[in-house]
Image (cartoon, rainbow, N blue to C red):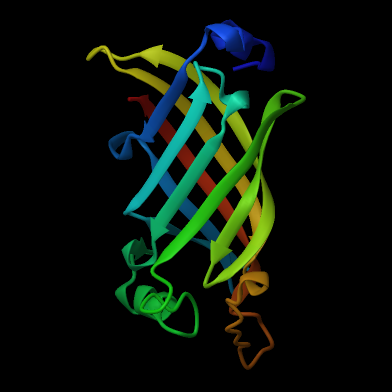
Length: 191
């Protein structure tokens, strides 16, 4: 949806009330992608997560709260051995660091998309990041629920968050890339 299309959902602050939005997990997906041996991409998912957003009316650029958490123990790369390694102290240390969290500070227009600025915390390390957001629009579903859709993408360095495990093959190939790509499809329900 083009940037100008969001304006049809905006109203003057004087006439708005705070709107609470929550994640619709049945219609959302939180995933990450990482290079393996620098020749293929492995996709991982978090199956348990939460997101709550507070806005003035239906205007997401007024968001006063954007709080996301993912349960580290819910990670899945469709390989039990790899998932156990990711949950271990060599990576996420799921026993000590149960959640990954993101606290959004600003949702702002940027050309034909939006930028979401906030703080990401992984393994006890918090860093500011910028995510790119494609706003899909706001609709009313067949059950009379108001929903908003977003595609969120970004990149982080895993090593900056303390995920420093490294290995190199005998031929000198890096086993796991430092760059992690974030890829989320989010559907929110007005509550």
